Image (cartoon, rainbow, N blue to C red):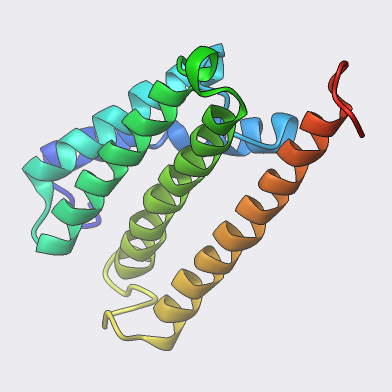
Length: 166
């Protein structure tokens, strides 16, 4: 079904929970919170997805995206434990890095969906399709707008902390 191998289904089903988890955390907290239960589940799902790409990918770009995802995922989660020695900088790096992982998850997810659905007659057959490029562009704009909003929110939270001048 949809031209996906058994291992491809493991990859898809393993990484799929990251999407609703990311949506939930972004809607509720304005960012991915790695030290929460949904954040831990997001981490595991993203890790499964990124690692299994190497087993199912047919295009070299996929391996590159998987490597970037792993770097940003580990950086973001690592920063959640670094606030004691990096201070507020850790929150900025954590937030931006984990937002990039959402983008790196959605770009191939949307691309693969458009190239496989509906089964037998996909919406997109060419990687240069205006529909596909438009969807990828919209995801990039969402990332830029989202990260900007997150940085503004973190700055405001820093100004409102007790003991800091406004």
